Image 1 (cartoon, helix red, strand yellow):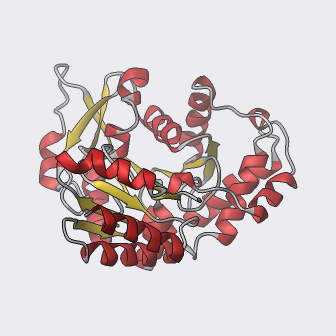
Image 2 (tube, rainbow, N blue to C red; image 1 turned 135 degrees about the vertical axis):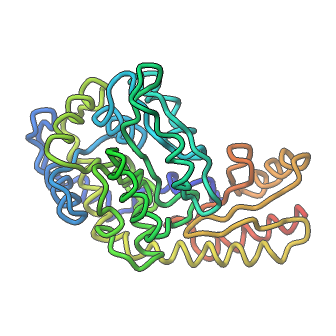
Image 3 (cartoon, helix red, strand yellow; image 1 turned 180 degrees about the vertical axis):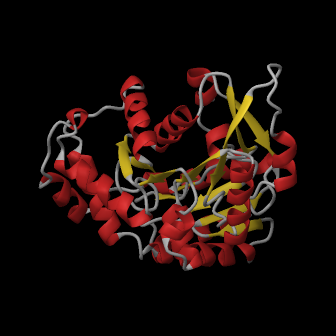
Amino acid sequence: MKIVDLRSDTVTQPGAAMRAAMAAAAVGDDVYGEDPSVRALQDRLASDLGFARGLFMPSGTQANLVALLAHCQRGDEYLVGMEAHTYKYEAGGAAVLGSIQPQPVANADDGSLALELLDKAVKPDDPHFARTRLLALENTWQGRVLARDYVRRAIDWARSRGLGLHLDGARLFNAAIASGTPPAELAAGFDTVSVCLSKGLGAPVGSVLLGSESLIESARRWRKMLGGGMRQSGILAAAGLHALDHHVARLAEDHARAQTLAAGLRAIKGIRVQACHTNMVFIDVPTERLRDLDRHLREAGVRASIGYLPSVRLVTHLDIDDAALARAIEAFARFS
């Protein structure tokens, strides 16, 4: 029985066409900057999103960490959402490895960080405090697309305070498809943007950090120091190029299936759909029933993120078709 895996869009498998592109990739030593496929991927995303340069990395976690290290020095701090991936789910790397202090700010329900809270969080230029240097936003955040007018106001506010700007755009293309906004517009105004290839886009590995010449040059040194300098990594970059060519527009299918999944779950007694945004559905299940739900779903061949977040998260992706959705909804119905 094939598993219906709704834990995350990171579980996608490369299809035959992507594997063929990987097998045919021209490669070189990327630490020397000689891999043509890596260079093509970096140049493609930099051009498409309006940046001077890109840098291919093994993971989104490393791309975000390297961005923070390029922006900040020891004893600096960055402002970040309390529920942001860079703060909560990346093992405290900025503090542990960069001596960069995160200053968390409560996320609103739409993922935004209230400007009045950000303003209060900025430290004065005083030796008692860490030096506030950077604002980090995330789009999408828990599947939610940040409102464009909010992003513009946040960028203007950060510039007025002399702060740099980083965007965790792991699912930036989901935001672009859902909002009908070109990804370059969503990235405009930020100094650095990280884009993940191994989530909804379906590549097996990799993220790209985008920024100015100077920031990416600094990031390249940090990537090497952190062990992210890969050699003939064009095999992986080729998967990213294939994903950009073939898997962006189809993200709309994931979003539509998330809506179908949410509708099916709303009809089941005992399950409350908390939210459905882009390719993510969040449901509330009584805490005392979570362990039993996990066991029941596993026996039915369904996987879900249970215990990772305060609510149960279900994520649609290119390996989830209509039949898989029907199986998942049926499994939830039998449990309730």
